[in-house]
Image 1 (tube, rainbow, N blue to C red):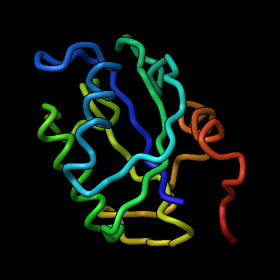
Image 2 (image 1 turned 120 degrees about the horizontal axis):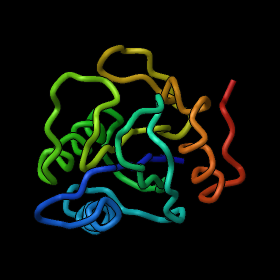
Image 3 (image 1 turned 90 degrees about the horizontal axis):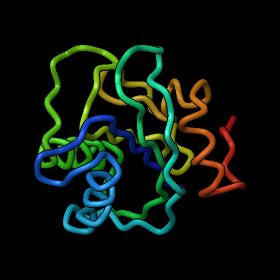
Length: 143
């Protein structure tokens, strides 16, 4: 199972609220070779770590694709760019879109900082795990 975490806490001039931006990104994914097969509901969560940033909208999608993990990561970065994400090199900054590759079937990749699978901090993040469990109750961290 291929799972992608979505999050945003800033509105986009072109797409609107964080939820509208994330929904537009999901709608655009087939153009990038990514086909959504299941989607969680949207969750409103506080920033992590706690700060004065606006609340986040978070969700998880299950997808199918012919892309390799690295190609999929590149496609997710391209979608972020196309939807107005500007990376300033500041960790945990406010953003209009954030797409994280959480799992790619049961592959394990340890290639920091480029790609780590499964996502190294997903188990620590309720804003990832709650929507993930809505998408699949069968998911488990492969040993």
